[in-house]
Image 1: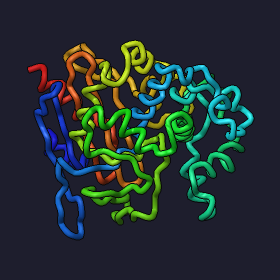
Image 2 (image 1 turned 90 degrees about the vertical axis):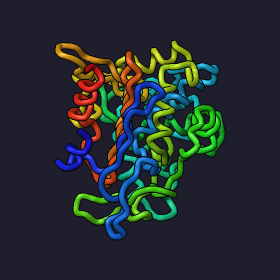
Image 3 (image 1 turned 135 degrees about the vertical axis):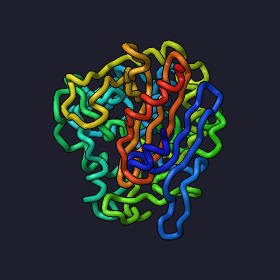
Image 4 (image 1 turned 60 degrees about the vertical axis):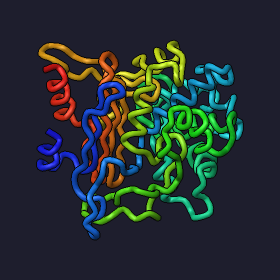
Length: 333
């Protein structure tokens, strides 16, 4: 099935399928470097883009469990330097569930900024703090990278300024995710080249990531470890997972029709019921990532521990319905 999807131009990268701890399929398709004819491989690192929002949500919920923050705290309580006029009314809950009203403007503002004003703090203080919200906080659903950058600043206000170190200590090392790290540059060791729609490679200097919305470099195998831990006490309590998997934002509330708005959203997780058997559906938790030259997805079926992770080094629709349908059919035979 995966080979067929590659032949049809629907995937171009690597795929892992697991039943619990058992990996039942690993495969890769297409080229990692067209000029050198290097093929993609299942063990390569990839840029996770927005998949990393799951990590950010976990870090925030850990802080909630430790009593350092509350979901109803406003931004102003933890980031007094962020002077947006609504900072007293936008809560951590709003940020986690994409109900803050912030547009996803951080990347656009960085591209426009002068060289000495491109730091994350500068973009937030000088640009984002001055923009008008799309709606009153809490009244609608609009997916926002900006909100997750602010969440990462709240995390660093309590745990230190090295976001990679925080991730390592709180998530990656406990789960033995030895090939995963965060860095601002999109490229790193053992990664494929990302190809834009016109066929040219995305150059290393063309894009930098913010902390919070994603930006980790990871592998299929490490994300498998993370998805195995989702819903377990390895990272959070049962109560916190229940909050994360609660549908806080609904498609009918969405201010956009783009991808993430087509399913309910919890805290850092999309909540999708996929067709499983005839007239039956299976509950899943997941997150996709998509940006210039890349798309990826990590999904876990809640009731049967099936895990699917994929990445592309060309942009493809990160939620590939045909693949999940085929996997469901295979697993129930």
